Picture 1 (spheres, helix red, strand yellow):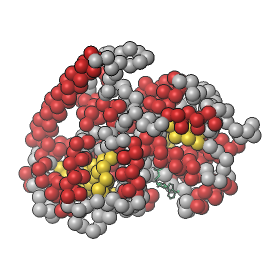
Picture 2 (picture 1 turned 60 degrees about the vertical axis):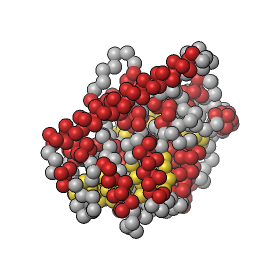
Picture 3 (picture 1 turned 120 degrees about the horizontal axis):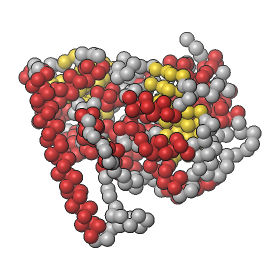
Picture 4 (picture 1 turned 135 degrees about the vertical axis):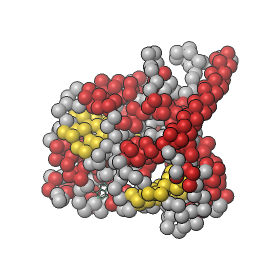
Length: 475
Ligand code: AMP
């Protein structure tokens, strides 16, 4: 096993690692750092929780520090760019950059929607080395000519699969086209669907490939179990579970924002201190909920998939899937929130009739049979015994219902939109009526309104993209 000192890291970084109490590199750090220090491009297949942030931030800081003889970075011209799909992840990476660089003179700033733009502009004008950003606000600042990417010599794309899921592909390509061609590019993704492969092909040059967990394999140390339960009994099952003191800090996932609120209210009613985090919450509310959870003020944090992206809280003892996700990769992401940095963790998933088919998909993708817990008051054997055919029929029914609901929502939105445009609520620059799409609502207040990815001409929805869209609209 390699030690950090064998990785040729400079003294200020070694001191920071000491301060962080990191004794040895994680496998992804061991495999990436030597190549990244040489300036190689990298394609990293790694889930969050593997230590991938330090794997790219440490060599980035070292390489940037070697090139600082010419003084401070030029105003509005950062030297490195890290792109992340969500604000939460951007904040977390920004924190890591500051901790690992605490003994160095490397400036960094975070750029994301839902926060005052003036402060971000001022930080850029003062000159920073590293920008950690989400795509929407970054493009906004580029369009305002407050940010130029021609001096960026290290470009990192983190959680590329999620970035594409969220409809950022065009933005990412635009951003990449503006970054200096003579650069080092790193792309990290938890899974490697073909779309990410194509993106990587276009962006990376002769990359080294580092893979620390096989595609869609679930975190090894997570002890997983499934509870079959009628939909109407899920909340009672959850409050029953919470009587167990071993559940010290639990992250509960729901499929919809509305569902998240209902679960939180139910838990509060049962005297379980609970926070909620989803796309309808303001940035401040999300950050407060997260801080309260981190500090242990809240025993439970209820979250939707997109909002929970990038949450890095040590000591999450349990991940509870109140609703099973319809995409197996989301299951993998979710349970990866526990058992972080070497700790053990447990994932408990509730599964009702309609979700039985999701469970089949998850077990197929993870190549693992999840053990069934029948030792609870709400166990429903008919769900456990449902064959694949019944499960698929129930799932098809749910998909139809979801589609209907989505159509109704779209119609409602269109109505609102038409009445707004009649009352003159128009975009000052385009003269077109303002459209408030799903993505903007998930990005929270102040996010940039955009239609979702597949809405353009010639888009033929596939089963997968339908599932993704369903996911996005309600998460
Ligand atoms: P990441 O995959 O980057 O989100 O990191 C997951 C967690 O692992 C974070 O809480 C890091 O602080 C922690 N971590 C990263 N590298 C190490 C290391 N070498 N030793 C111990 N903990 C680490």
